[in-house]
Amino acid sequence: MAWRDDYPANPYDADRALHRGLGRYLAKQRLQDLEVSARDFAFAMVNVVAPSAARYEQRLHLPELSRFDAFGRRVEEVSFDPSYHAAGQAVWESGVVSLSQTPGTAFEQMTLLYLLCAEGEAGHACPVTCTIGLARALRRRASSEVRDLFLGALVERDYRESQRGAQFLTEVQGGSDVGANACVATPQDDGTYRLSGEKWFCSVANADQFFVTARVGATEGTRGLGSFVVPRTIDGAPNGFSLRRLKDKLGTRGLASGEIDFDGARAWPVGPLDEGFRTAVGIVLNTSRWMTAVGSVGIMRRAYLEARNFAHRRKAFGSPIEDFAVLRLTLADMAATTEGALALVLALTDLEDRIDADAASADDVLVHRFLVNATKLIVSQQATRVVRSGIEVLGGNGTIEEFSVLPRLYRDSIVFESWEGTHNVLAAQVLNDLGRMPLLGALSNFVSTYAGESHPTREMFDQVLADLDKCVRDATYAAWHFRERLETLGILLEALLGESTAAAHLVASIRPRFEQISDQDLAARVDSLLEN
Picture 1 (cartoon, rainbow, N blue to C red):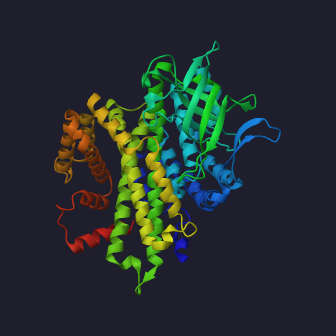
Picture 2 (cartoon, rainbow, N blue to C red; picture 1 turned 120 degrees about the vertical axis):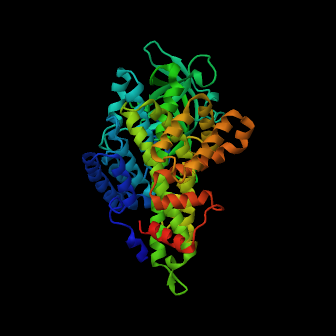
Picture 3 (cartoon, helix red, strand yellow; picture 1 turned 30 degrees about the vertical axis):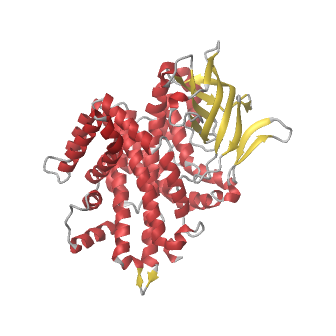
């Protein structure tokens, strides 16, 4: 088990790719300030969160639903193992959520969430993400009265005093078709609403505040949906809701997900009611898509470290298995994919940072609209593949829960893929956006910022962008080819934005028939990737 001792005592200090990436975007003083909190949290991750998660993610210690107290009164509470709250205290004290009250702190939040997801979702990455999304919606869209009522408790840094947020959008008959949602909001004389209906997939079922979409009036489709904040309790009693059950999920098991029925729950509007869907997608869902991509890269980084450290120590046929070329290629693929995904997520975070600080250009907003969906689609898929490769390196031991964190990372990465839109739904949204907005022009300008006419990937970029344009004009062609072209563009963007060695490896992955490279050059590339 000596390979476990090779895991860095402070994962932030050991992450050179992250350091280079942050240094590319941040001014010196801001980077120095970020590094203080990142180092502190990375230390807490190793010493507090990791051992806690190893306990409360086990089936004997998962969250439990308590619908009634000892006197038969309805409470609708979720109970957790004490270790869950020990981890939560460390996570909230990092400031990852409290930063939401300050516009333009996306890099700080990204870094802390990335470090957290070295343990997978760990029961807290989703509550963090949902709370940040609700806090952003309240800060940017709610009236001053509603903001004053609810925002302060969400951005409290003390875990014991803070409130968690959740987002309940999915309904059983709708799923990704949010326009089919039927939960109804009825206006009251005091300006609040009463919500009635069911929500089918409710992660953070223990949350103190719910972000909920509900239908206002008779307008059908997404235009008839308003966005609301619903407090869990009023005067100490459940606020017009009941929990049917907690879901038994493949992954993110330390997180309480349930099915909820609303029956006259009191709710407050978040932003104009006729812009409810815009608030839900433009702020809440897009925040979650960005942060799910961030978390996916954190998972990838941990999977690579597990595989690399094990390969260094494990001997077979008289040599460390890291000496075998075929295994070195596996590790190099993991390293290059992780670095490329990190580079893409950093570029998206830069846009998030400027948009949240109200400092973005029109092109920034357009590129962000494209990248937030494309990045989540591409990076979440890559995470599952990278973890799967890590399990392969460890062999049979890679499937044993007590041997390493990889089984948990694998389960969580698959759930990450489905969160905030399946791959086909995200691809369909990108295609729809391309047809309605001048995204291709903004994206071409974005590419030109990094890749001049002589850049080795420029010809490939031009071809893929032309194919995307063809998809916009030809629905039949798009139906068969758009998703593949979008995924290819994502890998090209990772190669463009990433380090040169990783870039070469990523480009090779999408044009293997055309790349001519000697064994010596391939070995040198692999060595360079593994040095990082």
